[in-house]
Image (cartoon, rainbow, N blue to C red; front, side):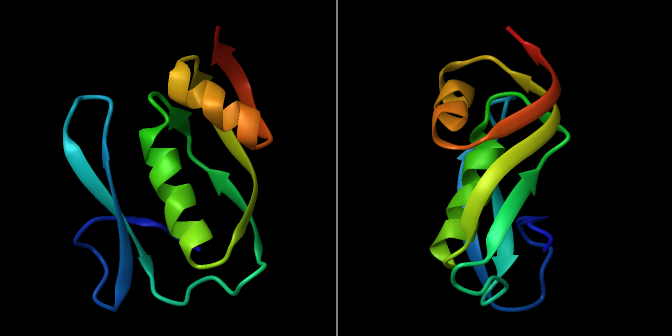
Length: 98
């Protein structure tokens, strides 16, 4: 299931807003009813800097009843938000900034 940048999907959507690593307000979209309740989901994001985008994606998935089983990335930087993600979800990255 693809979660897209705001303004890209031409169907009914759920939206989650966040502030990215540059300080810009952005949003993610997920088609309404894209996830069936109880569906197990692995969130994949190539580079997790602040963790805000991943948190927004998780918000969308859980709003639709998805069960996030983990987060995978090439790199997950170490900060307060990513530590919270690691505490709540199984996270795996090829390397981490610790």
